[in-house]
Image (cartoon, rainbow, N blue to C red; front, side):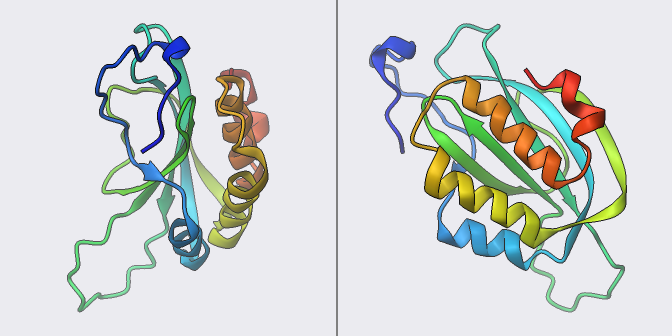
Length: 161
């Protein structure tokens, strides 16, 4: 787990950090998703900072094609993506479009498919090139890049800060 600098409010506290760091397996998982069909944008608190300090979290719903699945593995139906200031890129499969302690800002069902490989490309680019800076402004920039890959940035842009 990443260590948040003391200047960002940690001061020796042990915090629970949501989701897990992005790695090659997360990128491969995203690229194997055929497509997503809905997008949610949340504001969520930043662990260790005052309550009003928030960052953006994007949740994408995996399209269910209605196939009968014999492999009852409880597969999750959404993916949660975020750039958490002080920790970097985070990824998690979840069962429903929600964010712990998060506030829904906007949601949209997409008329055009959002292919998994497009989201994987954005996440991989950030993972390799843009996640070295752990500043708060990176959270909104990452959310904008994901929303742009989903072709919904215009509808969400005024909500991403």
